[in-house]
Length: 299
Length: 120
Image 1 (cartoon, each protein chain N blue to C red):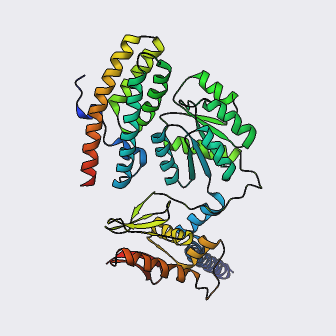
Image 2 (image 1 turned 180 degrees about the horizontal axis):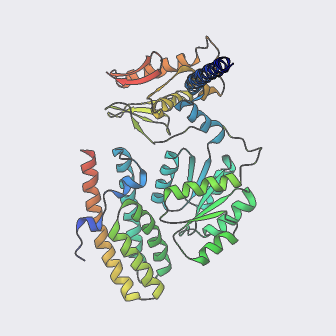
Image 3 (image 1 turned 180 degrees about the vertical axis):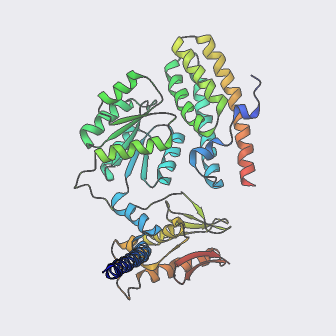
């Protein structure tokens, strides 16, 4: 009787251990599978540089207009915003801003200088007009750190104000907040915009690329124009942190949808760019790297 | 008005403001600043003694861009000039405009030297 009891307890312990062992194996295998899945999921879903840029180019790229009569300050701000991934234009006068609004898409957001010193209308008047006519959010930039100025900005309908000299991180945070609260209207469509992190980039020691003017030029003064698509693809390659862009990513960025097998559009564009680069500097090559895509190299 | 060069101009400011050390970009902004400020300084000098409102507008502009580019002493001078205009102290305004011209001459020389250094 006692022996049978001991046997039963022993058997129970044995089966319990077996159960624990199985659980452990299960957990380990589940963890292993999860890790493998995560690895592949990352490889499949992690956005490449090109896709991040593409997303900004099509859907999320904010279009900001800076209205400031100080050419230097506006230029610095434009550079900072472009570097942060926004698309920008600068109007040095309220007249220029109005003219731009007639011929270009209305921006998602206006950054207006409070002073607009040499103008007849101050930033406050400009702000009122933007809010009433264009119905877009406005952030006023002001050097005056006093309550009266803040009150004047808000009374004029400004959605926020930033005191100069501003902290860039703070300005960007305020831009995000305002545009989140006041998104562009649904009918607000615009063409694809090219992300221009830089005005010019050196492709080699003799050739530079100017994405704004859509051209490549040599130090000697020789200059070749690029088409819109050629500019976009070259800019993609230059902006990519990996220094390369695959055919599929390039196609998705340029045309907005996935490339079908056998489509040669990107190859044709690359071939044209290669010819142009070769004319200016025969050491500069746009090569195809297996598994990576197109990459610029100086031989 | 005996400033040391680093009290007049901070050569690191622009790089910090832009977040890049790209020589081409730096030179581009330095040159823009020099040309822009040359004309502002001339306008301020011309307006001295008869149009303090216009001077106020111009000093305001110079203050913002000067600070971003690193023109430390010039920015302080612009702040003093604004205060003197607000206080209606015409004698001090005239003195500060003179000081401003002298400071700009020194600042411009440092910037040109910096441009030359970057290009090398």
